[in-house]
Length: 173
Image (tube, rainbow, N blue to C red; front, side, top):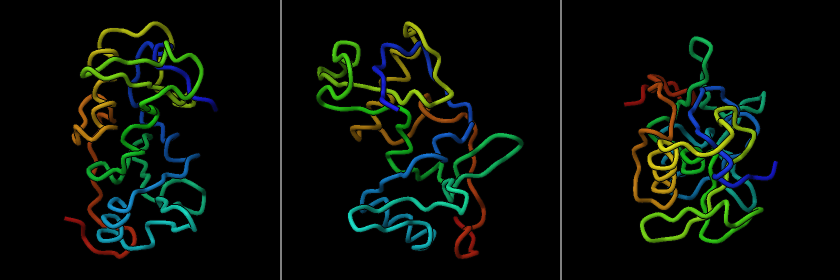
């Protein structure tokens, strides 16, 4: 699907549907890859000729996707790769898709062009509400450009951390 400009989104919240962990390949940077290999073993990743990817289960879902009482929860909540932290948003320095005026987000005296993957089930379509424009969207941009690591508004409200390493059988501290 082609991403849409942020100004078409009324609000967003993670509904723990797991969609982001099912149909996408997560590209890792080298530091993220090293951290995963150190904590979970090389089996948690998929190396390709040109990219390092987050591992998948046989059914194609992320190897860290867990189900708990009908919701889907990330087992990497405290060490998610950047691509996972900012999904379904995409933040660029220049326009990439569609109307640049609708994608423009002026923040911290800089112009960003923010788009959203319309496949996300946590999107509410319409004119952006204040909380989305002044809390959620700025947090996504801060995370995308490396100014913030901890997420309050731009992540699931459920906190989960697995107690067992799914690849080596050792306890994760």
